[in-house]
Picture 1 (cartoon, helix red, strand yellow):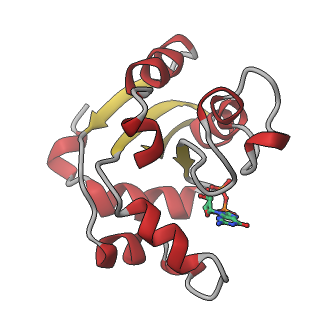
Picture 2 (cartoon, protein in one colour; picture 1 turned 180 degrees about the vertical axis):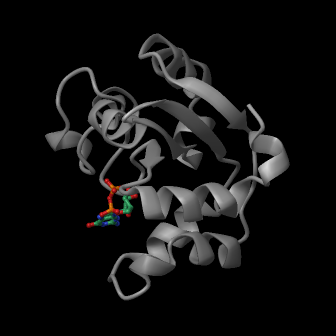
Picture 3 (cartoon, helix red, strand yellow; picture 1 turned 90 degrees about the horizontal axis):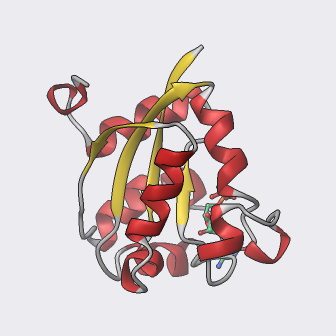
Length: 139
Ligand code: GDP
């Protein structure tokens, strides 16, 4: 099934100059980049994006990090894009991510882990709409 997923190149990866390297990997993996932008989220916007994690002990630190500088949200389209992208993204903690995954190669630590990826079709739709309008997704 052709799906869409939301990826974010997080502020750590933007800061250390990994945007181009990550985009090249995504294209090589066969994803269509349907939409892309750079955005500096406010603390409130980062809290809104991660609202599902608001009860987690790392919520304050995570939303500080996500609002610490520009990030690059993008919409990827492809066959089973949600699961396929999570495979190449790798485990949350880069120390546990398989070799060759984005997090193994670009992440700093469990929080500053270079990339985000939607975990279900429902969340993909919500997350895509958080950053992009229908007009920007015309493909
Ligand atoms: P993901 O689906 O692999 O991104 O992981 P989660 O949905 O569980 O967590 C969302 C984000 O919160 C992760 O990508 C990390 O940036 C951050 N995070 C997850 N677990 C921890 C943790 O134990 N400590 C801290 N500081 N951040 C975490």
